[in-house]
Length: 253
Image 1 (spheres, rainbow, N blue to C red):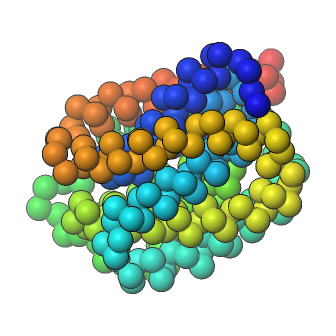
Image 2: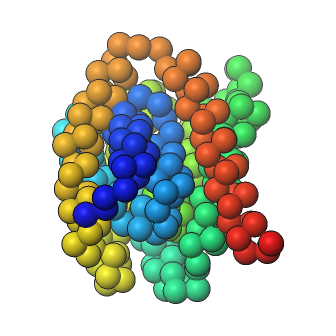
């Protein structure tokens, strides 16, 4: 099990934010989890520790949002996500920790800036489900989810323009990422990522995951998320920028 105290400080916030996001409060800010942990440990180790935790969260999220998802979007998105996971698995050995830091940093920064700069104008017509857009963005989501559990930003690029009901939107993402995360267990195991250190660390953090999900569900039903969004996306922008800087300087300077 990891002994570094600074890791557990970052992991506490990472798991809580991911759980609250899974519970339906805070949209896709769960993408912050791996960037936070990757400030202390290698990115793919952070992803390997988070995967069993995310699987626990998914079960809790499914219970909270059972049958509250859009079946058509799920049918469109699943095949592309599996393709994206396969591509990421086959190219894994050519991606270094610094490449992952850059990938995670770019995703985090772009996602945060998209939140602040690219809001749909009031009165515009919602987009409809699309096999073309859905397959493209879900393939990207499968790839980024495998590498850094950062499938939320690509999925939001596809789902947010549809302006689904808040609960339907969350239920759809919960169902989608439950399938994606359980599919990822196979390639992660084949790559030897579930060693004793990673599994014991995930086990210690597991109860916090369940608490985070139900906290998010409670907040989803009771509290406005405007301020929470602003704070989390600002933090995501800073964290992503830090990882991007780390990756670029380590590779080229």
